[in-house]
Length: 271
Ligand SMILES: NC(=O)c1ccc[n+]([C@@H]2O[C@H](COP(=O)([O-])OP(=O)(O)OC[C@H]3O[C@@H](n4cnc5c(N)ncnc54)[C@H](O)[C@@H]3O)[C@@H](O)[C@H]2O)c1
Image (cartoon, rainbow, N blue to C red):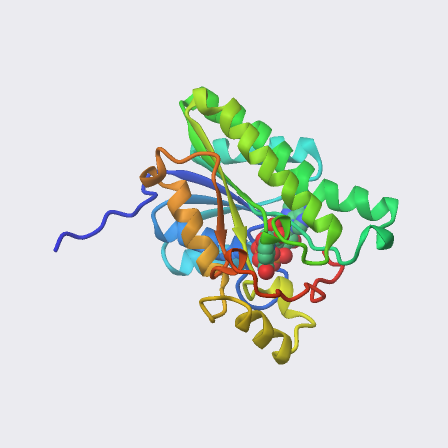
């Protein structure tokens, strides 16, 4: 049997939100580790440097290649500096994985003006800023792949209004960017994670709540950050060369059922 070539060999990737908020493995961290295992050089970007450094430590232990950049991506200047740093470090940019995102519970009745400003800045503006500078670079170098992290909350009424709005916006922006930048050979796709068990949801989620989440999924098992990461590897790779503008649910089948779904009361205001 022939040995498989690493699927991202020779590519340079930026993963935003590449740390995890707590012990364990979140979506950004898992994706960054898988990108490195598949041969990419990975720029790990996070608001909290020590979170990105933890991912960096794991990649280095596995003899992968990564570097750390601390940035608040709600600031356009820092998104620009992030891309500049990737180019200075690795000389090119092939993949942007837009993973930064926060949850926020409740309905519009619960939201203050400050809440709206914050969630729109973190979940949507940061993605637009990061994409802007990555696209400018990819246009110069002949193309690339952008992967945006949405959520099935954009497709189902899960009881988290502002989060759903931002994640729906990400789907709209994915499709628009995919069309606008196809001529530049830039593919833009979106993953919609379901009820995966990550540090983001672990806090405050009881064993009962966890079982309910698992039981509401047709496949009957719990998703993990690695499931999201593998989808990202595919979309980042040349195997997906003819795939752009898709919204890929990674949800164990949750969005194709008519079964009642759990509410996402497990979301807490967070950073
Ligand atoms: N866990 C789930 O069940 C689930 C489901 C659907 C979608 N998602 C999405 O997955 C993504 C995050 O997953 P995760 O598991 O990596 O979360 P995480 O919170 O563990 O990690 C995200 C990282 O982003 C960083 N970050 C936050 N604001 C930032 C900013 N302004 N600039 C730079 N970095 C910033 C945080 O410091 C954190 O380390 C989010 O977009 C989230 O909405 C998660």
